[in-house]
Amino acid sequence: MPFDNDIVDQVRSSNDIVDVVSSYVPLKKIGARYRGLCPFHNEKTPSFYVNGSMKIFKCFGCGESGDVFSFIEKIENVGFYEALEILAKRAGITLPERKYDSEGAARRSLKESIAVINKEAATYYYMMLRGPKGTKAYEYLKNRGLSDDTMRNFGLGFAGNYSNGLYNYLKEKGHSDDELSKSGLFSMGEKGIYDKFWDRVIFPIMDVKGRVIAFGGRIMSKAENAPKYLNSPETELFLKSENLYGLHIAKKTKEKFFLLCEGYMDVIALHQAGFNNAVASLGTSLTERQAKKIKGYTDNVVITYDSDSPGKNAAKRAIPILKNEGLNVRILDMTPYKDPDELIVAKGADEYRKRIEQAVNGFDFEAKLLEESHDLEDPDSKTQFDHRIAETIARIDDPLARNNHINAAAKKYNIDAVELKRLVNSIGSALKIQEENEKIKTELKKTREIKPDAARKNTECLLLNTIIQYKNAYLAIKDVLKPDDFPDETEQKIYDFICKDYERTGSAVGAGIIDKFEEAEERKKVADILMVSGDFEDTNEDERRKAFADYVTAVKKAAIDRKAGEAMSAGDGERLKVLITEEDSLGSLRKKLLSIDLS
Image (tube, rainbow, N blue to C red):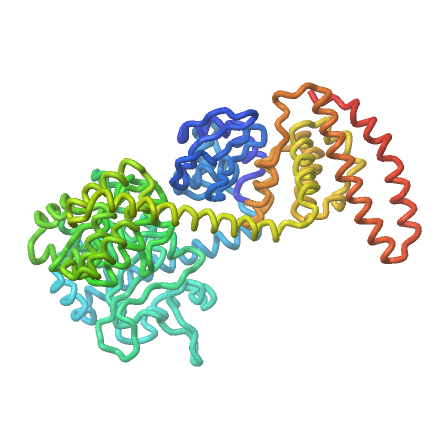
């Protein structure tokens, strides 16, 4: 880790998670915790909880969880170190210069190496476009209406007609084959490494900071079996599903919305026409992560995908993804033109802005698609259309909006309003039943995955939380309970970390425990465990002591039973005698625990 644990702990302890989260999300105190609407997904019933004593948060709707650092990472769309800097500044703490362990240093070195390679590759492609071998590609871009300034602003380039031009260029810069092979710019063949991009116009892909992280290429020749567009593969520096083309410029826009396009040329053409709020996903359907990133900069999106059938279907898929992140979505109609570039070339920027103003909401867009696929003059087709319209309206959550769409659709499509409302309600009820059935299936699946000792495991979670909150509780059991008394491997690790933290610093923090787990899924599991806390706020001292004594003896008894079974299976009589002695002492242990001060 580039910073000492002590620095991370200092920044964490100086930023109360309840105060930090409250600056983004209104919270209401519920017992010992706080609850509010989750900022990471669209919900109407609060399922987002913050545990101040554990210094963690958890949404039981979307599953997001973590500490104050991960909250800032998600809400601000930044990495850990940027989150650390934000929170340090908030607390008035000056951070020391970063330092790295061997693994972190190697990973950081690889990222920096790829970043340098990408920058030098972008320079090479840029020079090639403007040299004698780039004439064809340069004329292609000029014929597409791009100015020299636009080409320069987006760093456009050209990959030559041979397979080792970039490789030789970067080798002369001193890069090793190992570095180059991990950059995503080269392929391995029988005769060695060769350029992945050749005879293509090159579009450098930049992250939100303007750093070149990957490339896209549009082929110039009609090579057999070669894809028209080719993107860099994912690398240590580049995750396709998390980045948006043009975001490094669009983030600075004064417009209150983003234009969401399909490709590089659409974004570039729109920026050249004065629409500096255009972005595009990178050769894939829009992802939840990309939608979250957009949400970090605006609340409004105008989808401006191609007007052909694939473009319309892509827009239809993107609508719920954007809406689930709480974004207001409208869809721009470019017919009879295929894409933004073609529309602007034919009609100009003013016409495109007019189309933005005329962009329709998601329902009207889907209704128009239904119109195009049904013959409204044919009774049977019209009946099918009416049912599909009713189903579309039934999926609208807001009762007022749903009713307004019923009235508008009835008037526009000559449907009896009473009958349409009845049909919407009927379909809505069926959809709710279907949704409830899916929930039941999900819960049944979870139930099947839960071991028979689920109640005991809940007791183990409560015990772990209690010893984090009360140092005296830890001191009372540190010589009684061992990590292997917890059968679950994650709980064993948590208990071991708690013990080590107490021995090292004299305290344990729930959020600090999460930091010690590297895998994302395991971190979520730890957050789930730490959110299962006994609510002692409204209990007296005797009740707290009794609960604690019950937790310890229940966990210890279960551990003894399990170990006794193992000893009997192994024929280990001596081990069995020790366990029987431990079980006989549980009564005296419980009496001792009832005298512990848990104030």
